[in-house]
Image 1 (cartoon, one colour):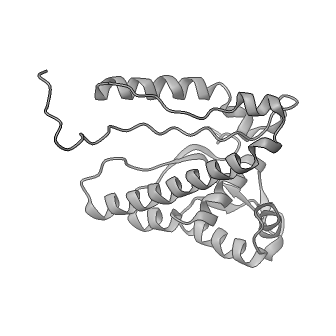
Image 2 (cartoon, helix red, strand yellow):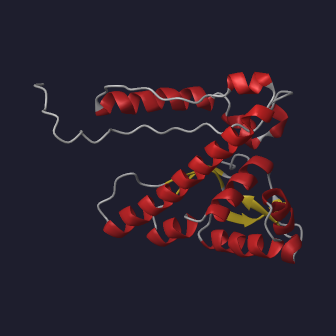
Length: 202
């Protein structure tokens, strides 16, 4: 069965070395760029990300060692295009292996830092965005009381909603006029109980 555009649907990373290798802001940016824009050379990627071609070339080669990107063919040297090998990346959220758990936490922490930086950058430029985009953008939180099963179900519902638009990421022909790259963050977790608050009876 042929792979879909952009490679396999999901690349699951379990090797602690690969998890640590992926935990780098530029490498994460490169993978995201290749998934959105298709094959690019190190020079083209550098121009998009404001990085040098040499730096992008180095990090692309490192990503290739772990199978996250591959040569697309067609040229050599810095002119050779690279492609993402999967549409998304996943890694264990729970692991009995201490090394794997630590590496997964490191990767998730780097991603959290990227999410925060992207959010702050948007807030800094928000007033320069068209009014329709300012109104459409989402920013807020909600206090919920859920069981673990309910939280998992909520995540599944969100995934199904987002899935309606997923193909547009990998096939620009499907993007309607006026569509822009939108970052949609999914963060939901149980809060630690406040100190000194007595437990309520079940």
